[in-house]
Amino acid sequence: MKDLDAATRTELEAAAFRRLLEHLRERTDVQNIDLMNLAGFCRNCLSNWLKDAADARGVPLSKEESRAHVYGMPYDEWKVRYQTEASPSQLSRFEESKPEH
Image (cartoon, rainbow, N blue to C red; front, side, top):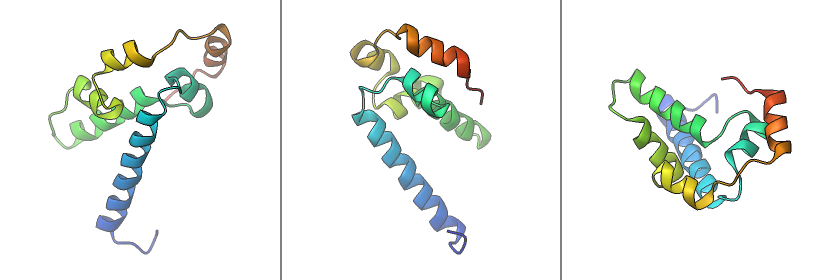
């Protein structure tokens, strides 16, 4: 990757990001708390990072728009369709790790 020009590297990184979003949209069984406990980030983090990138470049993008892009639908709709109650063990692991970013 070090020999790639910046534009090609950006294109590849963007393609990988799009693939990650596609994968997460298909894996609705994987809860955000599971992602946080295992990897220290979740879908909401991705949407926040996307918004941060837009803000840094002066591109108007609301929090709701960035979440809808990551989730593939409005966030409230995703929660109703797919979000389950976190188990005591999931909450305990989250409290132990307290991912920060």
